[in-house]
Image (cartoon, rainbow, N blue to C red; front, side, top):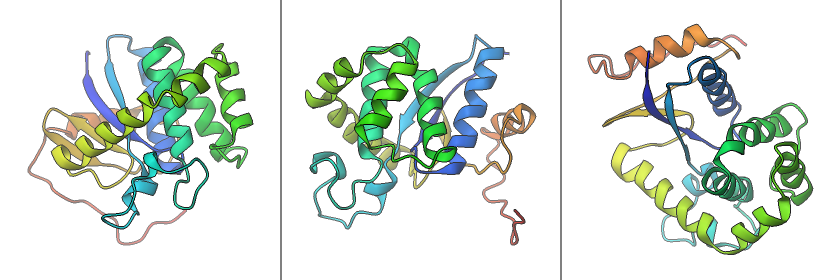
Length: 196
């Protein structure tokens, strides 16, 4: 069955990792799926109103955690789309399996190299400022159009739903959520206690 939707991400969030990797695994089994991976900066979301946006601050400055990773992901998504999914998974793995700093140049370069993308080219694209403009634009649209407040958020047409999967690699759970995206009679279903 063909599906078209978008999914937000930030490499800092373990729940974003679960959702994004599950979607990528499902895409491998369903090549007719069309998924737009949209960055949402958790650091920007925690920035005081009126302060300089994280994408306009110097790399590594206070409050920019995760921003460089998002910029590299956009450079690869938009310039090397055939390598994006592998890079996306490599960066989530670096963060959540290896506890690596996903803003560190060596971590980003290794993730790019693992997908066959030249890190020097990605650095050049990021330095051009284009990914920062894309991050600003897509983050703003996520907030203004769909009222996104976190990751992962699934978006289909005008519906946006924040979802936290508790287990990895559960395609059945993903299908249930995708089937419910356009069902608007339920606004919130939240467990009062979560056991890990």
